[in-house]
Image (tube, rainbow, N blue to C red; front, top):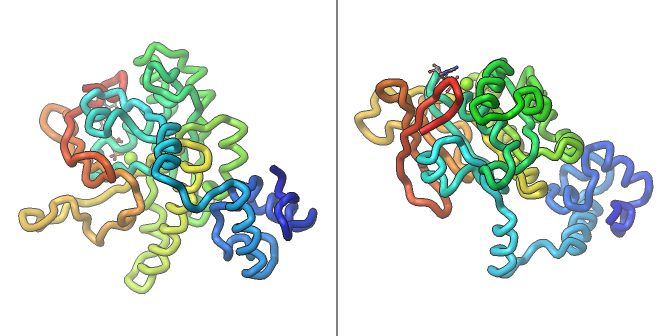
Length: 309
Ligand code: ADP
Ligand code: MG
């Protein structure tokens, strides 16, 4: 269905909407009225009507339990390379969801992201989606050399694997948000099955310092997470984000994983996994909260070949 077929959308409005990134009826259906208002220069009530029409045409809104189950059946999982970590996650990283890895510097967050950018490309019967990765790098820690090692570790052609990772550098938090808001073209053209945002929070931390800016930061981050969630739903892809935290010095009392300065991300991630270093190069992953999985821990290692048990 074309945008022009929605009641209230003429050729000019459709053009403006497309330019602003609302290219499909699906994208309109999950938009916020204020977004459309800004994009197309229309009134709030007109925007609401268009959104409702899009939802109706897609029969969105209410779903029966069976319909939710049908949608869940299209959900796929990407292997992490470690059986024990996969088990903790109920089989791997889920599509239609945001998975957050948080932990201290050097805990292995970026390594996991690299591995997933390789593994998403594996065929389904080997734990992948047979799709490409979109890697948003905010800390300049994406390393093609590391991808080559990991590709070789799974017996793949490193050149082909690198070819199917689209890397974008974000220079500040606004740029980061823009790159994700404009990602739909790339997602469709390149058949993206995984979006990595490594790190989700570093730019937001440095762009919004000081107490007075906390609520601004939170608002922007919420919007960013909302966009990511929408993309994961519409395109049935997995979103993986990282969040660097510092251990609280008073961790003997209360929650040792509560980061200094509070959780920037809050609870908008579907899955939250806390990573920490352990003895002999081992890493411990702890599932913090999940809608359908028990809390637990898994142990994995980072080897030259990548993430392993
Ligand atoms: P962060 O959580 O800060 O993103 P990283 O994912 O960058 O942490 O983890 C860095 C760690 O990964 C290194 O300290 C090292 O232990 C491990 N690592 C990185 N590259 C390799 C490699 N080629 N072989 C084995 N281990 C590696
Ligand atoms: Mg990192």
